Length: 311
Image 1 (cartoon, helix red, strand yellow):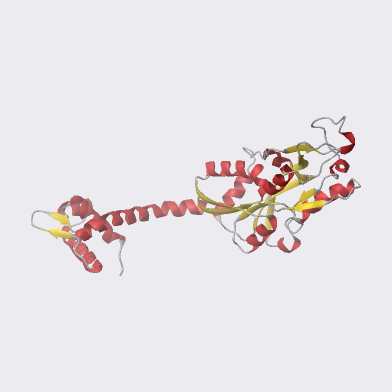
Image 2 (cartoon, rainbow, N blue to C red):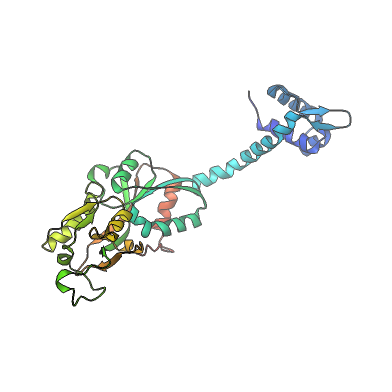
């Protein structure tokens, strides 16, 4: 079966005009070739579409069923050039974006807001995933880009590119009623805490395999302070880590933006001295030629107006 859009357009004209002569005028053609085209369509479909008399033309049950589908197909075909142009420019299509849980409290909301304002026709497939899973998915081509923690492993650097987006200090997330043991009587509320004092509490942390650099940065903080933390629990989601702190299971060092995650039983405190900075950025495959990805990168690199990723 070789059905042509031309046949459907001719059928729609006759169905709407209910007259072959008027339909021919509407189509800027003579009546005989129009009648021949409709007869050919009926033969192709194996059903009569019109009841023809000398005075009227009416649709058969088959014609009535075909008309709305034919109108839909013709309308969709007419929209194809615009769809193709928008897809080629990156203003339409699909963006598959993964993100680490901490990005949900800093980078992700303003990024999505700006992108959807600029490209409302783009569909966004969001997937929460840890950095290690994102790296695997990027290499396998399962996602277009990922919001993750650097650095990229050496073995991926020939295939992946990276754009830093946010650097923020670490904070301590501690049980709400906990105070340092040696200074409970004179401890000032909201005062910065030392890592030696925090070492009294078990440490809740990401497993090292999830994000080696982030894990090592936290352990190095304690080592540089001359203490060895006791790892009480490991968890892969920031919500889980904060939930464990809320339950009094220990403390955690988290990026500053996580303080936007309000949970009863948890307080966030700054660290005494210079707190290490944790960076979050976007990674993508160098050979990904998606116009939608290119549009996202252009938006992130555009300094005017800047996208503010406030902690």
